[in-house]
Image 1 (cartoon, rainbow over the protein chains, first blue to last red):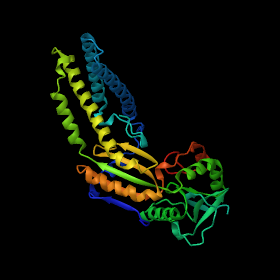
Image 2 (cartoon, helix red, strand yellow):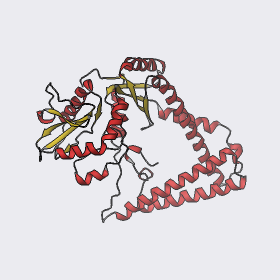
Image 3 (cartoon, rainbow over the protein chains, first blue to last red):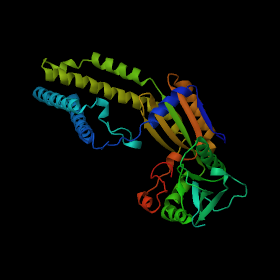
Image 4 (cartoon, rainbow over the protein chains, first blue to last red):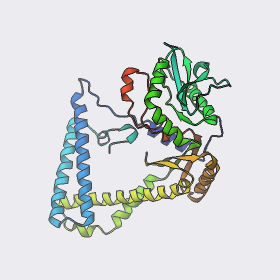
Length: 113
Length: 263
């Protein structure tokens, strides 16, 4: 570097590691070759289902936090969310997908979830 | 000049040709292609660059830095290449208003980067424990599986919420040191678990020393965080194009202009 430019830190290695992590997050692609097209599509669909599940869960928690759900409603919400989570877990097992695979990197916007 | 390959470095607020010899990629002379009252700084090159080396990156940066000393600069993305001078002029014609506005906005200003590392995992664990200890059980009387499920989810939700508030509190504290010396800023929070803040500040040239002093003060005051300051840079993160550039890709595949950040 020329000019009067500075890079000032007491922990250069720590920052190198974190910057490498950020730069290593390349946008994900659907791997749609004939051998694993089913898995690729399942990954995409399940990612979107998981996103919707998380949004539903968050909204439910907000309402519980605000005290706007009755005891019966909390019971029903719990039952629904639990079944939904179990069903997604079953589908993940069928398609051999791990939790951290259910995400889409949106490039400069970061991860979807 | 038809058929000549051209490598572009930056847009500048001048139409002058350079008296001194600046060398660019492959040792070729850097020159200015004027368009109305602004210019695009380029150099010729033989073959399109395929195998990028560290020397290419440093040479690009060196040219932009030299320009930055004398002109207001909009840095062009590394490896932006054109097949013909006509393509360069078409780009200038298409984006002239954007370039002009951006040059006016960043005149006499430079960019500084501030990055902060914190113990995110430690803070997260702390909030989790605090939430478990808090009296949430009153709301979840009964021991059905669905109740237990909701209780667990609620504790996580509360912990996540408090963690988010902690992030905001820290970022606000840090930003307070710097933002008073900046005219614009971009803050990115938690790009990784540890990287609490990756911030870019647009600072007037005459306030550079004030900004550096603010960094020293922040580092001294917030001793539990790890700080990194870099700059002055050309305003990589403060160039905003109002138009999409996709349509130009078909015309000239080598065009490589982003609609956000550097050109």
